[in-house]
Amino acid sequence: MVTPAPASASILNSDASDVVDPITDWDGFSFNTRQVHVGEYADENRGARIPPLTLSAGYVFDSFDDGAARFNGASREPIYSRQGNPTNAVAEQRLASLEGGTACVAVSSGQAAISAALFALAESGEHIVSTASIYGGTRILLGRSFRRMGIEVDYVWDTDSDEAWDAVIRPETKAIFTETIPNPRNDVVDIARIAAVARRHGIPLVVDNTVATPYLIRPFEHGADIVVHSTTKFLSGHGAGVSGAIVDGGTFDWAASSRRYPLLTESLRTGLPSLLDRFGPAAYAQYVREAVVNDVGPSLSPFNGFLLHQGIETLSLRMERHVDNSIAIAHWLEEQPEVEVVDYAGLPSSPLHEIAQRYYNGRTGSVFAVTVKGGTQGARAFTNGLRVFSRMTGIGDTRSMVLHPLSTTHASFAPDLNARLGITAGMLRLSVGIEALDDLLLDLRGGLDRVAGIL
Image (cartoon, rainbow, N blue to C red; front, side, top):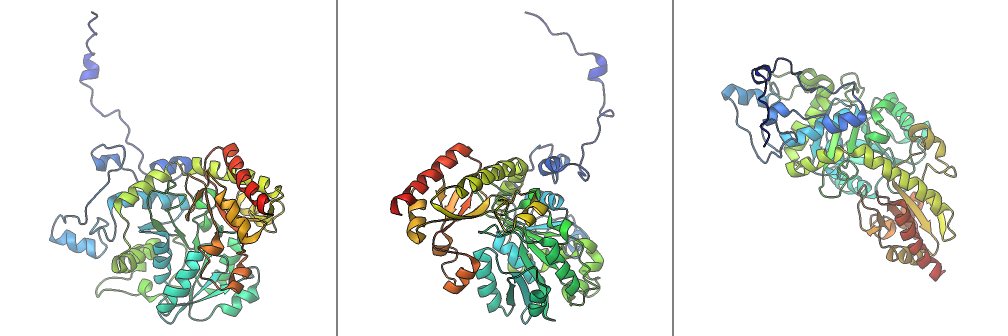
């Protein structure tokens, strides 16, 4: 038996003076590095490499004065998990970094994110303008719940026309809303063009970046003021938890706007400056947290916040596979005799190809539509013939999914509205996952064989 040599005295007696401090400020590092590290502070977690799941509704104040400081915003320490939670804060800091924003507020779902973002801007008697092609659930939210609360919404169909925008924007219009890659038709919009309209009217531009994610496009770089996400989708990536987020770009000049945003620019408490004076470029995010999320209560479960920041760690890797698969599938589908049209802006045949190239280098995500021949019967045959693609609602999962919008997400819309939106009987929405491409093509071929059988 060999006895190991004793450690040298210099090693045993050394101190930690030669150990460099870990990095905590990740500004300047690449996207791939920031998606793994931002928001993690090992020294605050007793050395735990992975930020712990903090299951606590409330947090102890250090003193009487500490409690007051937390409530007046002088301290950023947590108060109650309805406003924020240390686990969720990791995801918030990480997403703010990846989007290039000043602050982020995590909430319970994507619908909660859209609601909170817009409720912070408009109230009863005021108005929002949106591009026409947006997710069906968002249209329902704006047309039902917002209308019940006295907030009216108008839609712009020709987003390249100043006249179309000017015709619907009113003195009481408080926000413009759009999506980078609209769901389900992949009909991408010119974000900088819409941002210019918003600036001309002194209105913040709110952009839903769910389908694109900050890996494919960062709307703040093209003039957006606020970004929202259904982080349930690509950011979490595995379909295991529901969550949402609002990111403040910190660029909108609330004080100089011709529209009034008094809850941001005026004091909410006697003796305290306004949120804008106290929080500067993060004032909007703080207002969303204090006066919308806190009041209405769409707080994020810390368990789902944990799933979110874990998912973000692999975002770039997953998005590469999602998009590679989607481009190959879109080209393949376009050549199949059972297919009428493929709505993927990255295809050279798409009328939106120039925008797709300019903003996305032709890589317009992995949610798009394919219209098969045979109308509803063709769509039914195709859907029922798939074995790898899951028949379900949802997008942005590692698993591939298929949905028939006309009978599901858009079933409550009037026929003329669906026709104008391009939601037809034979159209299917595909959300392409990260499975092997050959397996996905084989599965799609099986679905199309079923379509061929009824034609």
